[in-house]
Amino acid sequence: MNSIKENYLRIKETIPSDVKLVAVSKFNPADSIRQVYDCGQRIFGESKVQELTEKYNLLPQDIEWHFIGHLQTNKVKYITPFISLIHSVDSAKLFNEINKAAEKDNRVIDVLIQIHVAQENTKYGFSPEEALSFIKRVLNEDYSFIKIRGIMGMATFTYDEDIVRSEFRILKSLFDEMKNSYFTENKDFDTLSFGMSDDYKIAIEEGSNMVRIGSSIFGERMYI
Ligand SMILES: *Cc1c(COP(=O)(O)O)cnc(C)c1O
Image 1 (tube, rainbow, N blue to C red):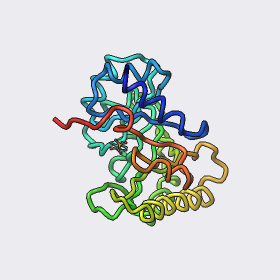
Image 2 (image 1 turned 90 degrees about the horizontal axis):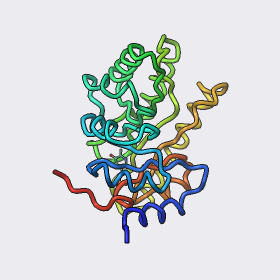
Image 3 (image 1 turned 90 degrees about the vertical axis):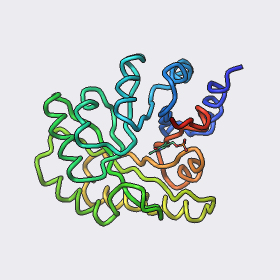
């Protein structure tokens, strides 16, 4: 019996084919990731730079690594050579830094703008209004090494489904507003990253097309 594989296959079955699954492997060892990889999963999410670079070196090269945690500007350069998507652009300074590092690596890096909609003040991100004006500004400037693919957000940590649902609705309507205002001609602005283990089904109902699932696949994390 292999519970990680079983968990993965059970979750995978519940996700529509037009929704991407990011298997969030933070705090889990490379051989757990390998088990999920062997089931066919290729997108994995990590939230710490050092942990990610170690795993990147140990695991197959066709994995698409996504960065989902708060990214410190001084660590950007360690992931720009290989990262597929950075979900967590939460400041203008970080955006700038990614563009600079990507230019050195001669890569165009896909990013999502992180939006703060939860009630907790511990979560990072732009407010919806800030995000709109930020995008308006950077699209008029020269950031040739970044491609904005969409937005990412997290709902409040609560059992109250109405709160979670209403926050996901804010994300979806913000995405639509951005799309209609700034990306009408741009097919690459297509990603809504919201929904985690406890709320991904609600997220998909509310328009998410990328869910980030960790503990329901790998088990409860052991924080060390
Ligand atoms: C840890 C984490 C997840 C996964 O959370 P689970 O509840 O374990 O599914 C998703 N997104 C972000 C940003 C995270 O940090």
